[in-house]
Length: 201
Image (cartoon, rainbow, N blue to C red; front, side):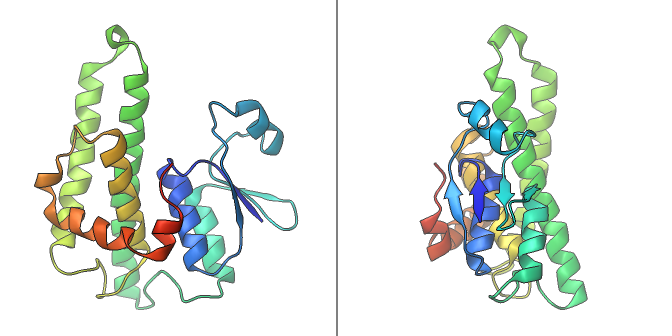
């Protein structure tokens, strides 16, 4: 089984760390959807990262779907809470973290444009959405070491991956000093062996 994509993508990294924590063996192949487009296209005509190539040769795309599949065949304990109320809370927080990842990616792409072609109004709106996502996550992170039920979950994983990615690519939009609880959560998560084994490239 292979996971295709670069770990500088928050989607590839959250899928990779999740597979590792759920006990799903895989090989990681670091291909860029930009620099390695032709090679990636030969594997998956969609050229979408992450792409998981199953042992049967079939492809699975989208980090959330890959994680959902991994949860269904896991050998290690689930990364999702079992209690319905806590599971719903985790989903809500994961949605916030995925929004933060998405808005960070949009900022990256907008800055790839020549300065005279950037849409300042749209960029300002995206940065506002990014801060709104982290404002909501910060309030939850301030209540304990982990976000849901006092134990590490997919909500923490997705949030920590998003936060690290934002700091790498859009740190100017989100100051660390404004999000002390998220910074602390990220540092705790990044000390876990699975995070250290799969750092952003």
